[in-house]
Image (cartoon, rainbow, N blue to C red):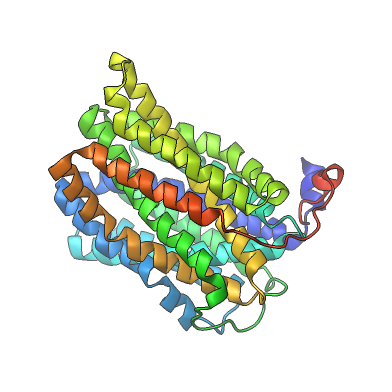
Length: 405
């Protein structure tokens, strides 16, 4: 292990360390935020749903925010994003007991988090060897997932035996984000991504990437909003059950993401994206019709499997990012286009909860997932059109030495 770390370039090593601190902060915050809202403000389900709009709004505006920072390199934008995350978490830790200041802190955190999504992907691709972009994305995704488990474990310890309280958790997450910013600030701009980037970019050649993000936005919000709701409302699962399922999904994702990256580099984005669509159709059927299967009380385990598989498959975003990187004729287009992709998927996902909730109430929850299966089928068709010319792959025997050092 030590020998492998020494073989990495200083650039990649700094980014790995920064990614670890980002993951720890994410695990700390995302594990505790919903409980914080419930315990501090005693929110109803409808109030929590309304809070999603300001929370997701920075994701919708991320292309504009990233465009305004066009004169910074991706590394510098990543540092700015982590500082914003730290600032938002600090506000929540110090002043989060007031609704208005909580809202401000949440929006600042969300702006940093959504800004970090496209630039960290672009940096990862820039650090990869030719033909191993998806492998690099997968490895770094696995590292971040492992770090988020550490953050979740700290919450479990802090709210359990040590009784930290939410303020201490948020301030610890802020400190972790700030350390990540300091570490990444030590990096040089990544080759091919050093200069000024387009402020805002829409190109015909990227239209299939845009469509894949539209479909992902619909898929994402259906499962984020209504997947857990089936567990809670239909099967009566307690919070502890969802926490255990999330830990299992994260643990699996820690190992799955690197393997997924290798699959993308070996077999191509089209195969992986089409496989994802087929599996998602199965997940939809599991969510929507497990209660009707002749399994009795064991039907809930079908939902558990659907929930875990659903969470793990979010890593397939690696394939979309890799597809764009191979499609782009100019590497400076990548961050602007990834940012627009985030904006597109949020434009869709912000409208899905209201529509899905209406369908649930009027027709029943099964029809929400029938609709989601339809989206997955459209994703299968769209993915079948993915075509890119791939660089010559590095031989398998050399893969262990190709850690993008």
